[in-house]
Length: 306
Image 1 (cartoon, rainbow, N blue to C red):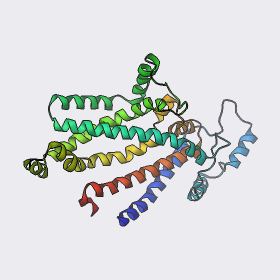
Image 2 (cartoon, one colour):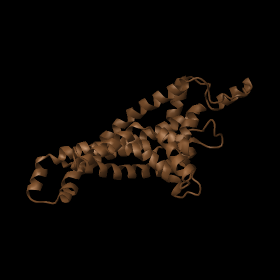
Image 3 (tube, one colour):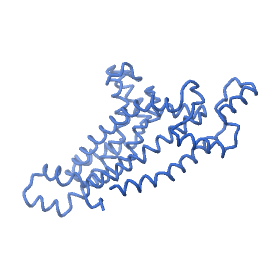
Image 4 (cartoon, rainbow, N blue to C red):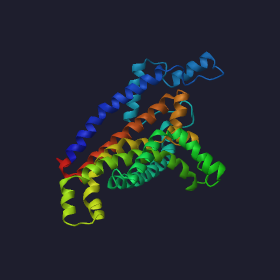
């Protein structure tokens, strides 16, 4: 297990370097700059600002300086939020995205695995068709369409829930964003669980358990569920990282101050260091969650420990 950890961590270094280099040069290739505005700054003021942030140096030198600062845990200052560093912005936005993404993934896994298992147990029956029809609908409808629809129904017309913002931090403000994020994931997880569960239920060891007279509930929970979850676990690694770092669209629609909202503002304002910091943070999360997936394989399937 320790060998696997070392191998994955060593593989993460070149992956992060490629991610850093691609993001660094792509964002600087975009038109505009961090100090562009409707009212153009005097040339000497803009020159002083570029010198203060080392933007007047060659790109290779800027990239080397950024890597050196990043190796010391410094994401740099934000160009647009002048009184705050990128580290402070990430630290402020991540708890919101973490809470939103974790709740959405918990809901998605619970509902998706349950629906997928029920559909597999009733394969080619009306319940199976109905479940898969709902799953396909969830996959087909993007969250930027679903979220305003939920706001219209439950906030504007019914008045049951707030339309946006965090308010006083109550659970009511999180219901609509969590559901909007979770429904698409519910659909994917339900389809993955159904396909995997059908394959597992046709395995010889399941037939043996049935021949021994074990109840279907016992067979499902003790014998079939763990191997059926292996494809789901593979999907959950990057999906969880994506949800926790925040959905750009959902956070914009509901006015939530998470990482997704900061990323959009940083990209629009050419805030190079803010965009780079969030991309690096997102990349590290994906690597960590994929590592967790590899470790979970060993728990779900002892053969994977080799």
